[in-house]
Each structure stands twice: as C-alpha cells, then as structure tokens.
Image (cartoon, rainbow, N blue to C red; front, side, top):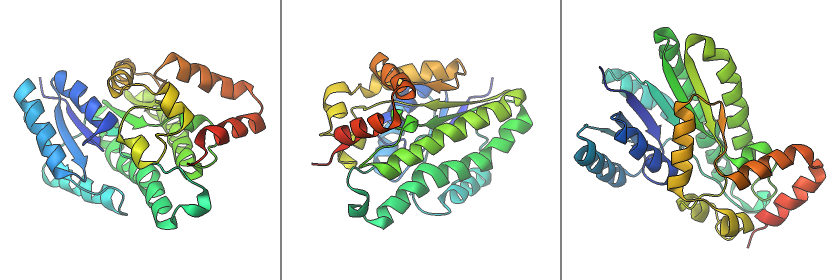
Length: 259
C-alpha cells in the first residue's frame, strides 16, 4: 500500500510540529514546510529514526506573495502527489490596530489567508480527480467573534472557518474531507510572537500543544467539519452565539488589552 503523503505548512514548531509527529507515527511520509531549515531537518531526522520513513524538507517563507505557487511547482517537479494538506502556517499580533506596522498586518493576511487559499486551490483539484484526500485548516476560537486589539488576526481566522465549512459542503460528494481545527490559547511560541502570552486567556486557560494536536488529529481522522479542543473552549464558543455582540466585544477587549 502506498505511503500517505502529508504536506504540513508551519511544521517547524508548535501545532504544526505536533501534528507532524502524529501523522509520522501513523506511517505517513511528510513534506515539512517552514522558514527554519535547521528545525525542519532536525524534526525530519528524528521522525525517520523513530518510524523509518524518509521525510522531505522544503524551506520556504510562505508569507511572501506567490509562495504557494513556488511550493506547488516544487512538488510538481518532484512528482509529489498530496494525500493530506495541513494549512497550519500563520501568526498573530496583539496591539492597537494603528500601532501595528501595516507591512506586518499585510503579511498576516498573506500567510493566514492568501497562501492558505492559493495552496488549497492548487492541490484540491488533484484530490477531487482521485476521489480521495483531506485538508486540515488551522482556525482558532478567534474564528467565532471579532477581536479588539487583534483585529486582523481574528478576521483572518474567521475567514479560515467560513472557507473551510464552505469547502466541506462543496467537496464531500467527491470523497474529499475538509476540517477546521479551532484551538483556543495553546502553549506554543505563537503566544510569545503575537505578544498575547500575558493575556487572561493565555495565562488562565491555555492547553498543551500535545492535547490540542491529539484531539484535533482524532477528529480529523473521523472526518469532522469543525473541532474545538477543550471543554472550556467549546463552552466559550457556544456562549458567543447566545450573548449580545456588544457584550462579547467588551469581554474580548478586556482579554486582549495590550500590556
């Protein structure tokens, strides 16, 4: 039986790395993509040693316009067909909208939305043609409401959730599944880079990377449309649907208030 080939973006750390370990443990061949070539090579070597499968490292900055096409062309040149696409790469920033450099915010949109969209558009037709395949997109509990002081990040994650659900309905008749993993605060490097690690929800309600990945992976394998790891995260996400919008905005503003 051919090896399952899994492409994971943002695979050098955090949830991307955690998911890579789970796919590798199931015997998959991984294509690991991120900027940090040293980290990717170290991870690939470790997983090969543990599971006996050679993995492929492609160092690439996916925050640059056109990076998705560059990656797809590399895959095509190496005759690599993707069975599972994990769109994990992304970042956030916590501050007042006018205080965050516009270049950084545009890069956030490029990485969190445009590259994810473009890469999916390039790879999905092959899955539909073969009538098999799966896509796992990284959303967030931020996908379910606006986020003062992280306005652009929350907006990008809302896009990911809406896009994923729409695709799920479009392609399920072709035996292709699309899942959105929506974790809450998770103990990864993300919170530090985004300057969110001091926020109430990161301090008091964060989950381990291992727990988030394990729950997300199991739900993905069961072909779930949306998975929200953690009881507290599920309760908070459900409560957003019931509470007045203005109240939700004030709560998120309190949680996300910059240092």
